[in-house]
Image 1 (cartoon, helix red, strand yellow):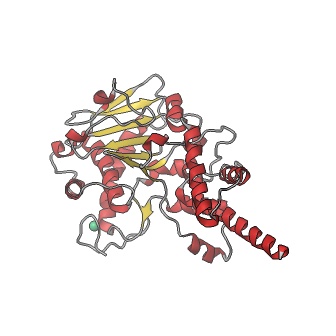
Image 2: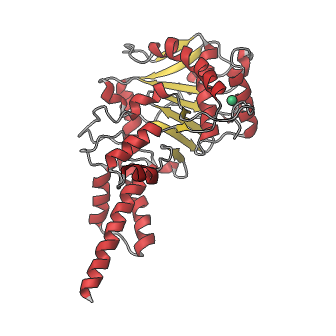
Image 3: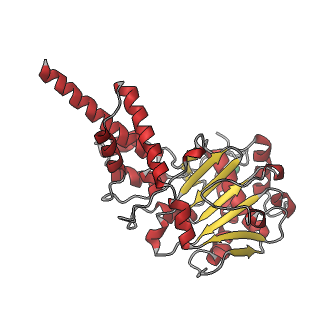
Length: 347
Ligand SMILES: [Zn+2]
């Protein structure tokens, strides 16, 4: 396969992170002590039904099973998922991978320290003068996500233009970058490394909205200016500040800053709606397999297994598609076995 960026070289690189690894790593760090007993959960409210969430790159559980010679535990799955999360094999060539580094490195070295680890108490915005690097960095995330993850799509004309801009990020006129409306919020994450595992990594795509959650940065991308509309998304922006923080034809790239408290209310509002979504998910699987309603007890068991705090894992993995499927299937299989046994003895 040819490289998806240059289209010239063979795409021989493996383990390319399409969301910059050093940004997302601490959110996925399963070795770090995870939060316990906080009862805080990630959610999306029900009115965003139809939204597509891309929280996890599929991990090959069958392969993991083969390597281990037995069924992987929840913890092993979480580790495997965290290690391969948001990375792809054979999508890009070594030369484009080097090129990515040329965009990522200056952002990580000069821009990131203004945010991560800095004391931002009382600060609600930060302007960065190096528009080119900020733009190239975030548009790179948009482009790679669109190329690598089907949950995140952009139209083909925009995709081609973004490829051109990323390949020519040093020479392209900066106005070519700033024509794309872009919003970036930085989530102040205080309380040590463990607090980062509360943050999310993934995509939220609905209506015209394209949002990338990359740990302490939340990025919203629009393909063109007329598309720009306020997203109803956990008060990330409101009418009073939305236009102010919208980067378009800007000379200074503006970041909105959330305090640690705002970060938590952004991440953890609407737990009830989130539970409802989980219950609907499980119920549908149960009904389609057994042609009858699950008992409240078995639903409770599903929820309790998911949220088992003795397992350390980031919330995005804990409630990721993949884990939901594994936990639900394990319970359904057991119900099937027990029912079969019961029938046998009754004969
Ligand atoms: Zn290439």
